[in-house]
Length: 467
Image (cartoon, rainbow, N blue to C red):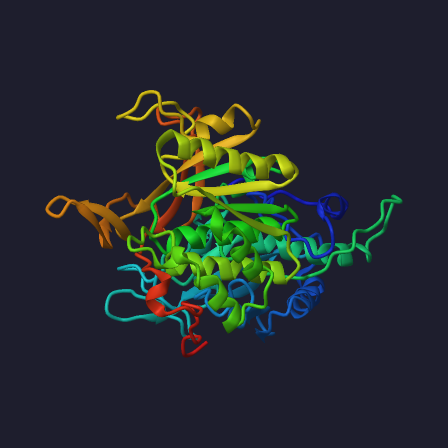
């Protein structure tokens, strides 16, 4: 890990943006407070109180643990809850830092991988042979100090992940107040920072490097998983809370544009769900995964972000009555119109993995021009990412050789294990298919058609017990 870097309070003033903004830029080194731990700790309490993150505290050891908070702030269908363990650490008698560990729980057990079961009780346990031992805060030091990825630390006990993003968010939130007590030798005004907080899940590695205002990111996905819609919603949440306006493009029939827009502007009640799900698209005789429960839940998550006043927009762009090159031309025209109309926004466009390719030709048609190929000549910043995933299942429609018809259902999906953390990664140059890199969603789990649960909210669930 990079050596500790001293961060002065004056430098912080240049880094803190608008009040309440959750800055997406996270350094890959620790935030160091130039104040003693005992002087800094009351501001930590105040931050979590103002952020509406209730906590319990061990005042003797300067450790606090927040209550569970649901991802996407109150949505009934998110299925993920998070809490934070905050540990005050002394660097020197006059300098201090925080270690913040994010603990995540999933209602659908998606996070419970074989060999990585997590104990969600109050005590922190690690298995050592047949005799689990209770760990003290000091016992976790070696595990917390082991770096993984861009800005994360993983504890092999499976208790959680160190969250540098949250550590810097707290730092930016409380240092302006602490700085007011220090001698000021400049007229530079102290930025006002609010602790307003939206839970967007663990930071997606690499997202901050690729998401740019005016840029277009094309995601080529495998339809019919729980993880891709979650990846999209989580990406949008992390971007809009950092102040970047985001428009999401979905490969759904253009005839559904008004219906989806109306839903996103609604209160998300029973009648609103019925109006959304009445569209014939959701009841296709060959449901290919685009009308899944996870996609419906993603729309609810985006609706909830909009309801919080965050700048999220959605459009649909598929032309299912067309085929071949005519369809690619129509897809391109629809997406391009959205990008040209709002060039200051970041456009995140998802589809099956042929349309985003920025290279000409397919194995069966060397002259074929995919949507990505057509867009790159008309938009300055286009990034195409192919989907990478660990093996699992997906709801897939595939040709049945015996009946010559499409067979839709839960099928095995073969992938490669690259861990359980969402990330984006680009290569030095595009590959032969015109992809610039990959987005990784971990182990994949099939998501069935939303209509199988009726015409209401398919993901309405009660919180798991013990939260």
